[in-house]
Length: 476
Image 1 (cartoon, rainbow, N blue to C red):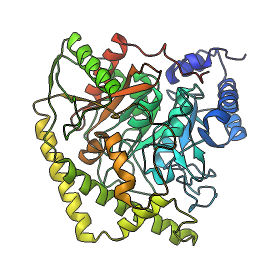
Image 2 (cartoon, rainbow, N blue to C red):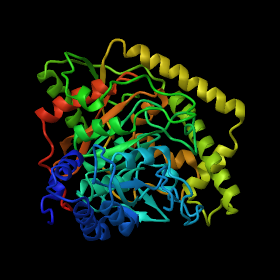
Image 3 (cartoon, rainbow, N blue to C red):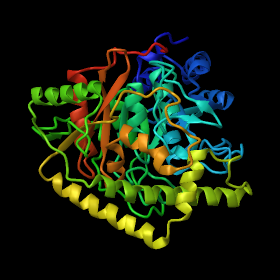
Image 4 (cartoon, rainbow, N blue to C red):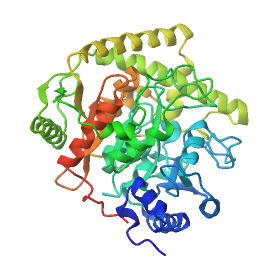
């Protein structure tokens, strides 16, 4: 039986159909493949496929998990699955099958998910748009001339267009929340170390990066935490203990919350008018839901935070490039790295051990200051991006001066890196559309370990201001 309303269902919805024997897993896989083949020429969201392996998995006995039989996509960064290439979007990395499956992907498989392939990323996931020389640009299903965001941009485009109900994503400076905003999706960056990163790494860039998904519903976002949350063997640290079930916890009422809202960037400069409108509308909605909302933001010295963040960012990139070069024999240079990546690599090579550790100390001091501020506020509302999704080609990837290359990026992404630095959870929700039909995501930031509260608030917002009826021009 072919499933004609495949894209109408979220992940849990498709799994319910499998559980009730109304559809077979292989029929879901075929429905996903048909949509990938139909939409990918326009979107370039999926850059490697494993259709026959997926069909074989679907025909065999699957684990009886909450997402049994549901098609899924893995990101080309950290999405390690044995026999599947993982190139980090860079020409420096050879097209070779991975020898291992990561702990996170083991948990996906144990939940019954069926991976169909890998999604497009920018080189090393460094920027908030998905446009690499290796793969070419991912295109936004709402307007193919615009960015999908990054670095999980391929995942964002795949989910937004209905190829799959959800896809793997990770976030080192906003890379879950940014594509969720650009593509009109739900995107949660969990608390630091909530999900495992082993066995290849303990953390990334001293804890800046986190793993999760992009999806279309809050309940899928919560249910996936039930699948993946918890430390892996030998992890260097782990997040505060969560509820027995994140999905069950998300169904509870959040109570009356104290909410702060940012109406400008941290340096006082304004957002794009559409972003301001979306942010104010989200604040108004929270007031209507009975919460106390006022304008406020933590006192963050933005230049100091950015300086420390970039020290970790460039130092971490240099480590990745050097390790990859040592393993493959490929040399970093203009033939193997994009100009901006090469400039960031060279900046990272100049970072001393003492400078790196000083930056870690600065980040930890900042985290304590922001945590103290959150004693006054349960939630902080900000936009995810300072403007609607940028046109493709806006960022100059040939620019080797990191300050010149990253200047427009910092203006475009004014808030998300802060939560990577502090380790706090933050969820982006698709609450606004521009007059010309582009999504604008609004971010809700919680205290360390408070994903349950974020999910509870998100569920009530989803119910009060639903988005499931909105679809891009490239859909289903």
